[in-house]
Structures are given as structure tokens and as C-alpha cells.
Length: 375
Image 1 (cartoon, one colour):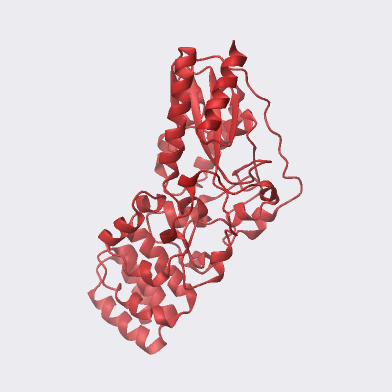
Image 2 (cartoon, rainbow, N blue to C red):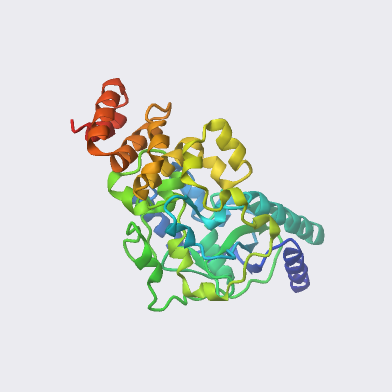
């Protein structure tokens, strides 16, 4: 009975748009996973993602999240790009947006599929079920490895033999008994391409990430000022970073994503920096509605675009930068100072810096303008 139920669930998952489906049990996650999370948090490598620490107790084990769990259906939906994800880095006049964020918000797409599969599972088994995307306190990558979807590579992301590094993950916790699949084994071998390509050296060691140095974290999750020493390495990345994912050799087996709802939207394919710098809040919301970029907010995205402008060496962006020196957001004003100093001739930068220093009240922004003014 359990095997026939599992077969029907797998069939429904494929019909719902998932490219990979496996089953594991909650006991497949041992105490070592929770201990690894504890070390990560103790060392502060989560940065200002306070939600990770706040939910740590529930995150350690799936039974902490839902005690009725007897089996876990792990599902993967490919978002493999049709084009080279690193190509946008070559054009410094445009902003590079991570592949995962170039389409409709994957949370909506994946969750709709999960609800369809879970609904079928409940009807077939009569057992309760819960669905989770990555906003829930669930260790989805270790669970995906335990289920056999792939393994956590040296970049700490999941790697699949069939889909490379390009899987969105979702989970269905069910009270039904389902036959588990065999776990996947680590197939990274001696390869370290993902570690070596990282522009900011965010990997202290293989299989370890310090989010505080990760460009994806800095440009998306980090709410404060990005450290000056890391800004040049960000290049023109305005939302996320695909470097460590894109160089994985297992990507050669991945086919472009088949779900049309995950197709890249024209407005998110390397938008011109000049357009990003001109965005006010209303224009930002209109442009990025329904996409992952919207949740980061206008101020952080413009902050990132100013860093990209400063790195571009493109003096034609200077007027757009100067329009932002008095912006309402301290994040934006501070990065306008940095970009201005990088693009303007020294005398002009110093003159603007002295005027802004006299008017500025925010201590962190004043520090940025102090550098520009030579104070």
C-alpha cells in the first residue's frame, strides 16, 4: 500500500512541475546537523539574519517543526538558466541579477505545486500533511541529501547529478508512511571551482560559508552599509551572485528550466544601472512586483546599484549618482558618496563632499562623506 501511495505522489509531483522527487524520514537527520547549525550561529556567520538564531531550536530537527511527521517528501524544481549566468558580469553598465530572481517569485511557484501534491497525498492517504518552502525553519538541504535529491557541495548548496546547482527545494511533511529513498553521496571529489571563484573569499573552508562575506547575503539580506573593503569585489552584481553555482561541473547535465513561470523576465535581465539609479519607491515597486527583488526593497537595491556604478568607471553615470547624494535613505546617501568619489575628478568630489559633510547628521553617512571630503 505504501509503495502504491508513493508512486501516485511521485506522479502528481511530476504533473505539478517538479523535476526531482524523493522521500526520506525525520530520523534521517542526525544530531550532527543541529550541531553544525549551532557552530554556524555561535561564530556569527549568519550576519544580521536574526531569524536563523530565533528559529534555531525548531530548525534543528523536522519533528520540532511538526511532531506528527512520519515521512518527508522532498521536491526540486529546476531553474537552470538557458544562457550563461555569468555573461552579465562582462557589461559594467548593467546590473547583474541572480538567475533565481529573474522570474516570478519562486516561493509562489513552488508553494502552489507543493499544495497540489500535498492535497493529493491527503486525499489518497487520509493523513495530515504540511508544506514548506525555504521561508520555514526547516533544514531543507540536509533533508534533500538524505532523500537522495543531491548532496551539499563545497559551496554548501545542493548539487544534483541531473540538475546541477539549479534546484528550488520544497518539502511536504506527512503523517502518512512512505517508503524512503536512499541518500545521495558526496560527489565533489577534489574539485574546488566553487571555492576558488568566490570574489569575496566567503568560504573559510570547503563546506563552510561565512555569510558576512557572501555577495548574495550582502546585496539581498544585509540591511546595513556594505563594508568598504568588500565593495570593489561586488562588481556589477546588484542582486545576488551566481558565481559558485555557475562553475559547478555537474551543471553540464542540467537542461534549461521547463516551468514557464520560471522564465526570465525582460525587465530583470541585466537592467541598465542608469535605470536602477533613477528608481523611486513607486517605480521600484512597479518594476519588480511579484519578483524576489521586491522584498529587498528600493533602498538596498539602489545601494547596490551605486556600488556597481562606482565599480563601473563609467563617468556618464555621475549625474545619476549626484542626484542621490541627498536621498532620504542613509544607505543610499552613503553609497552615493562612495560612488561619487570613484567616478568624479578629485576636486569636484572633495567640493561635494564638504557640502554634504556639513549637512549630514547620520554618523555612518558622515564617515563616508568625510572620506570624500578628505576630512
